[in-house]
Image (cartoon, rainbow, N blue to C red):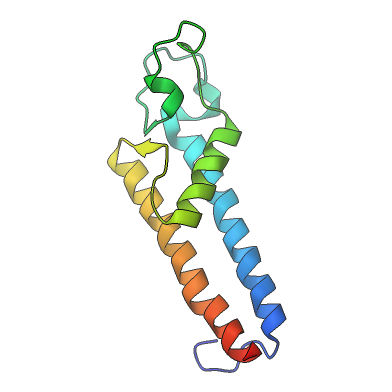
Length: 125
């Protein structure tokens, strides 16, 4: 692609860009899920595990939500919004590890759009 020879079809490149973007979201959702609070194996077992992310539910002082723990869908939403907005939306990174992971995901998403999608539009034009 950098030499100008990759992909003769704009539609193919757009599909490839979408595949890379969706893979990016899924991989980082799994990565966020597996690193936050020690990952799924420690879910509910460790009372005071260090959180890497601050979810909105964690800020509420409701008795019904007090013991709330994020699940995969919460991390999937975090990865999706980070890849779409290139920044945190409702969930804040608390640790340096979380900040670096979010930066890496946003950079991959931005590069995917800038390189692959832009090339596809150029071919279509």
